[in-house]
Each structure stands twice: as C-alpha cells, then as structure tokens.
Image 1 (cartoon, rainbow, N blue to C red):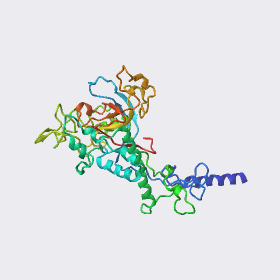
Image 2: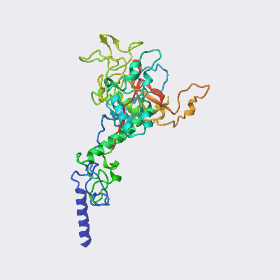
Image 3: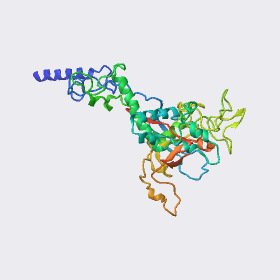
Image 4: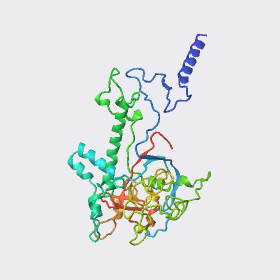
Length: 413
C-alpha cells in the first residue's frame, strides 16, 4: 500500500509539472516554467537555468522574408558566351531574408559617417567607394565622379564603386549597429525590456558592464547581415511563387526574367509596353529617344524604380549587378550540395587547376567572386537570374552594387 501511495504521488506530481504549460507540449515560444527533463523550475533564483521570453525572430531593418523551397537553378538563356558554367539542376534553398533594395548611396554615407566618428582614419579611408570607376578617357562622365555618391539628388540610387571586400565590411558594421540599437531599445526603459535579455543581473540591479550586450540565448540578437549566396540570390530573383496558380509542384511556368513572360516589356494593364528593368537596349541605346524614353535611365536609377518581383524585391534585374558570397568556379553547379548550395573556397576544385602564371590566360583564382543580375550598362541577356560572371574581390566598377541577406534563425524552413 505504501508503494502504491508513493507511486500515486509521483504520477500526480509529474502530471502537474507537465501540465503547467497550458499550451500542451512545450515550444520555443512557450517552454513552460519547469524543465520536462529534471523537474527543476526555470528562472527561480540566481544560479537556476534562465529561459528568456521569446516571442518570435525580430525582423531586421530593410529586409524582406523569402520563403524557401525547391527550384531549378541554372541559365535558361542560350549560352552565348559558351561558358557552360551554370547548367540547370534541382536544389532546395532554405528560407532567408534579403534587402528589399540595393544598398543606396545614403546608406553608404551613413556608414562612412559612423566610421569617421568611431574608427581609425585608415578604416574610414578603406571604406570610401572608388568614384573614379565613372572615369573614361574617351567619355565625359566627370559629373558622376564628383557628384554621384554625395549629391542629395542621388541619395536613393545604388552605391557603386564598392568591392566585394568593402561590401563584406559593410555587412559586419551593419550587424553590429543594428544589434546595438536593438539593445538600446530593449534596455533603456523605453522599449519595455525583456526578462533575461541582458543575462544574469546581480540582486535585481541594472545589468553589469559585462552583461550589457544581449546574448544569442536571449532571442533578441539578429544574426549577421551578409552577402547572399549565389543560390539564394538566384532563387530570390526567380520569385517562382508568382507562377504557382494551383498546387502545381512541377513549376511548369518557368521565367526567363524575374517577372512574368519572356520579354523585357510589361505585358499587362496600364503599364503595358513599359520596360521592366534598367538595362542597355542595344549599341549606344541606354535610355531611348527624348520624348519617348524606354527605361528612362541613362545610368543607374532610383532603387524603387520598376515593379518589384513577387517576393517584393526591387531591381533584381538591371540597374546594377550585385555581388554574392560565392567564390567563382565554372563547375560549381556540379560540385556543390543540393541543399543550400554554396562555394566558399576551392574545395574539390583547387585554384592550381587554373594556373594564371606566365603562358596561361586563366583569370580564375581564390580571389574572384560571382556577381549577378545585369546592370544599366548590360544588354538583356544578363538580366536572366541564371547568368553569372566574376571579378576580383578587391575590384569595383560603376555597374556593380550589392544587397544584404540574413538567415532565418530558429526555423527549419
């Protein structure tokens, strides 16, 4: 009888502990107040395991959610360059976030402002875009050299003259600055604060200097802003969600460009006939004729120009090409994984295979990076998401900019 009594108490106690979570089974946002493994209460006293309040992943400024899934990456255009470096293959890309627009001049000027204020002079100098990318010996582009970055009229035009290395440095700064601002909002009394956001406190006092930065466990620290992988960029540019008219997993309605149809003009409604991107129509034709301009831009354009694709992303074709993370190799399509494909280095395809020493003509090494999307100076061929080119990571031009991406933390989607 005594054994039965003790068993009954244990069963009732276990039931109370597991049922304290009114939502049923514990979840990340509702873990309950007691550990299901040890029966010890969370957050009771100093030294107990701290489980912070967690509502959802906070979305970073400027980002748009990109729902992942299966797709066919690769060029749908005729391979006029005969590179055969992006053959079609089926992959799955996890959900992520991407900037709604290309990074603009005003954003880069803000970056320079804080670097000048908070960093060494050489750091500021290293971040300056190369404005001489506009210079041409046989062309009068002098106004762009002096005015494109700093003149207020160009504030919301894409920043150019930025190398892959400079773009990565910007991502590091942006991550730190955004998380610094989130910490201020959460901890200054105006943002309401969150339990355990700043880690352990001493006797309920204000957070110590060592614990003044939110931890990853708080759920209130954004992951790193970064350049998108080539697969992420191409997937986001395809925006195939706009072709899913029914439960058609075959994705029969493929796109040549980031919009419906296989032409560069809008086929629908009141905007019918207007160009869908900023590109070079043909030899010497950057904008059309006066009084009837086609794409309306002789160089770059306003970052919100032209309709967004079905993910809500602007200028995923034309305006400026965009840097992506990947190291360039012509056979990446057959080497990389089929889940979140990405080439970070020369693994499986060493740079020695592309000897650029005297007597050889290869431009491929471990310092060249992929850029995609076409620009104001490119013909329509390069607007297709599957086309790809490469350039040295420390180089820059007037036709390449970038946008940032971020992982979808705490999700298996």
